[in-house]
Amino acid sequence: MRIGLHLLLGYFLIVAIAGYFVLSIFVQEVKPGVRRATEGTLVDTANLLAQVARLDMKRGDVAQGQLAQALGQLNQRPIGANIAGIRKDRNEYRVYLTDVRGKVIFDSQGLAQGQDYSRWNDVYLTLRGQYGARSTRAIADDENSSVMYVAAPVIEQGQIIGVLSVGKPNSAMVPVIRRSERRILLAGAMLLGIALAIGLGFVWWINRSINRLVRYANGVAKGEAVSLPRMGSVELAQLARALESMRIKLEGKAYIEQYVHTLTHELKSPLAAIRGAAELLQELPPPETAKRFLTNIEQQSARIQQLVDKLLVQARLESRPGLELAPVALVPLVQQVLATKEAPAAQRGITITLGALPQVTVTGDAFLLGQALSNLLDNALDFTPAGGSISIDGVRLEQEYQLTISDTGSGIPDYALDKVFERFYSLARADKPKSSGLGLNFVQEVARLHHGSIRLHNLQPSGVAAIFTLML
Image (cartoon, rainbow, N blue to C red; front, side, top):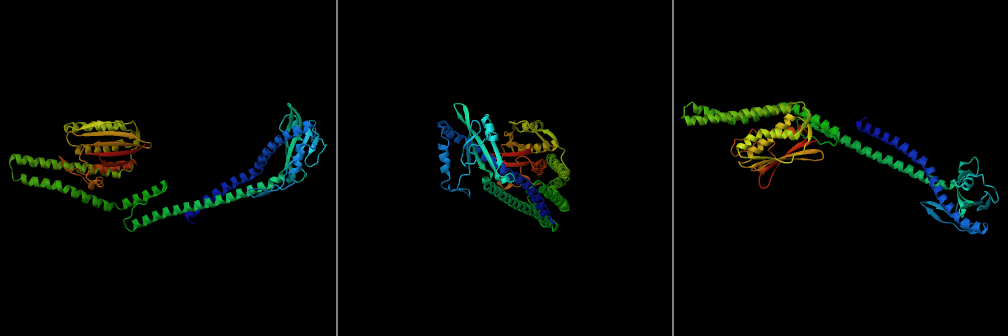
């Protein structure tokens, strides 16, 4: 059985079980809920009719009073009400009135005239100033024959002079209860249908994501140039990254060949310069010329050394199994890196300004973060002319911290904006030879390992802002 079908069956089973229990509770609550609502209506009706009965009892003419006349005329014509599909043509209320002793002095159905109802709960409790109600079966063995009675006191000058009770058969509520139960069951069926549709959509998404990974793996196996698919969940994204890591390791040989080729190309120029200077020195030129050639050899040797050192750092960074994670106070780290740049900045008359830096602690590798910040400051110093300025500012956002290093240099040409992070890509400096082209690539790798980012954009009228973002 496919994994998608397993997930669908498990999901649908959970929803069905949960829906069954919820619907059972709703269905079980329908009948008492309707009866509670009906009881509330009976309470209002009983208290209203008790006021009419008070006037009739006060006049001593209950049998021919307003209450008797109104109830006698009530069913002379059909009501003709359509209540959400339930037809109602007649009044189901039974109303009876007792005196202060509990004796029935009026009954709308004429069933209990003159009888003693003082022991029935509705009359008994109401005569004692309490809420009186009862439910009594007309047929002892038939639950559907029960009638709910609610009583209200008839009060004259603060004294209870009688009790008016209003009764309604529970069978009158059956259509409402059944309709509510049908609607609940229909809603439950719709819920299960929607749940099934959502489950099918979820399974489709899972199968689609897995198929994308399968196509990616098949493409890698065939040697095709395929890009890593973007996944919609953390787990699938981790699986995709694992496949990408495997692909990178499988392509290691080609990577090393390209790496060596690029390194050879970068070393060719300084080696040629050193060889040329050495050949000229063999001809024993004048001291001033020899000194110039020796200086050139020294500069090119330093360039080779710098290139090799940065390549070693880059290789260690790319091959390390993980970061040495620890809490890092970012502001002291920035201040520490800045202290190492004060001397070269002062020599060139460049002012470095430390702006607002909210205190923040991030989790990361302090050494790598320090190296990344040092590279960003080195770039700013290299491209800032004498007398220029560099500013460092920080801002704490909801889930990240942005550190911005801005300079007043010449900016980045438009054609180079999308290339500056490539390995070995370097722009010409005004008074310095081209760098190794590894600095920004190193910063980008450090940012990636810390789940952050690095962005560069030109400022107006001149200068560049480097935005180094770290997750909190």
